[in-house]
Amino acid sequence: MTEPAPPAWAEGELSNVPPAIRDLLHSGASATAVLAEFDAIRAPAIYTSIAPVSARLPFRYHAVPAWQRNALAAMIGRLQRWRQTSWAAFPRWPLDLSFDLVSDWLGAPTITFARTPVLLTHDIDSPEGLRNLLAMFLPMEEAAGARSASFIVPCAWKVDEALARQILARGHEIGTHGYDHSNRTPFALPAERDRRLAAGHAFARQFGGIGYRAPSLLRTQALLQDLAPRFRYDSSIPTSGGPYPVPNNGCASARPWCMHGVWELPLSMPRDGSLRYLGHSPAEILALWQHAALRIANAGGMVCLLTHCEARFSGNPAMLGQYQRLLEWLAADARFEFVLPATLVDRLDGRA
Ligand SMILES: [Zn+2]
Image (cartoon, rainbow, N blue to C red; front, top):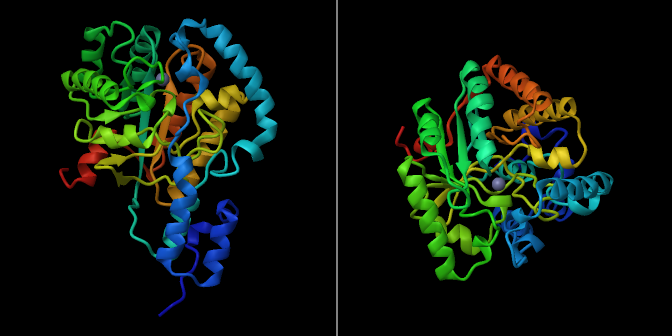
């Protein structure tokens, strides 16, 4: 029998493996023991078990003007950029593929791809986001031969149904973005959570939606356990969450896996919101995205990108220009393949 060895793609990635796991790998421990220990390390980062302040406010935090929220977040973000070791001890920022690396090292069962699926996703938090999606993002994606999935907040504002129908008619996908974006569903009592998920599901069903994205990526074990059978996939766990919504959150994997009866499609790319809050320029963001996409492709994972369509995130000329360059760059490289999340899930289930 040959000794387990690091996979060929591990070069340059090994430093992200948590020290305790590195020690175990070199001690000759069994694959089962190493992965059990890694799962124990990962569990607190996979879930966000503690409610952030926004979920405990007596009013919906969106009642605070966006510019005030943004100004505060940007100030904290710029300070945070220099303190990465405290908020990205594990998983590392901006990309950490250490769980996939260790799985391959040990020859553990895992899903990999010959061509890298590229999932373009948007969280639609407001009527402005929905308008910008149709006017700015979809034409750009269509020109690159891509389609995207938009997770729409179903119960906070009146969703213009005609606009939503246009998204579908143009071949894109609609999913559910929580309930009202008050960040309470993951922490609510079971009956209240069920009521909120049922409303989100009723919204999704009108548009053939099968996917869920948690607002602010806040996800508890109770929430993820309650998604099946209403949804077929969730995409609320970042690969490397960075500082938001809580420090040290993410799954350190860019591969789908089945959890609590639904497919988990990890958000593998650093998010526009986090990057902007950390003070990165649009040009730096493109370079970070390209670098991350290549590392993910090399590792056999899936590229899953979230951009917000509001002007304060990616719905502005400077960010849209970089987004367009990214799309053209991906479209020109045969290693990448644009896929809708729902199509990927059909493939994973053997339905397509
Ligand atoms: Zn959102």
